Length: 212
Image 1 (cartoon, rainbow, N blue to C red):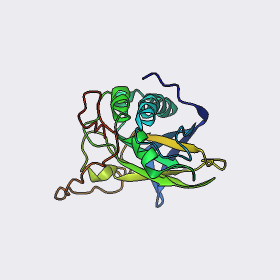
Image 2: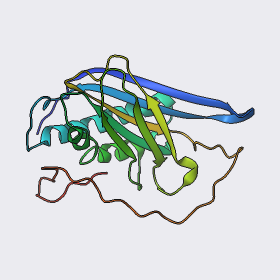
Image 3: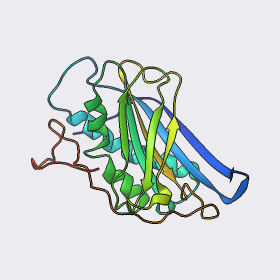
Image 4: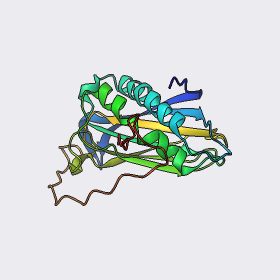
């Protein structure tokens, strides 16, 4: 399927933390998020086959990861954490966000970053103009590294409109708790949750397409 995602706008957010509780952070911790506001091809109607949104996720996975890494001015392989999120306008379904985020978005993200053994943390919601998009963050290669458990909030005052979806990818160049402050010991692994189930979220060969 050839898809050309209909993007209304792209916004880039960069946060750089230089001090925490009166202590200097050197070098500063940095995180960046790239957000695309796109047309929802299925707004206002129910369809069984969400393949177009899956293909859109694949396109945005590469584009937004490239933009976020470029905003930090680092090679993709130097990124330490990642996360993804989407917010659907009122005429869409939560499952529209799931179709973008889960089946195919992950592969191009990992390709840009050079690796990514861990599941990409994600969140999805429905909301109106100015809704806050909460992007969870975790270490790209080790899901249980607690020093990289984090999150980033972004919002656009004019998105998502009723027939739109906001999609975001965030990356960091360091841990969220700098080594100069505290360290967190490893704890027992938590039980992994089952992947979301989606209608027609399958590969070209008819097998479940879980690219989380």
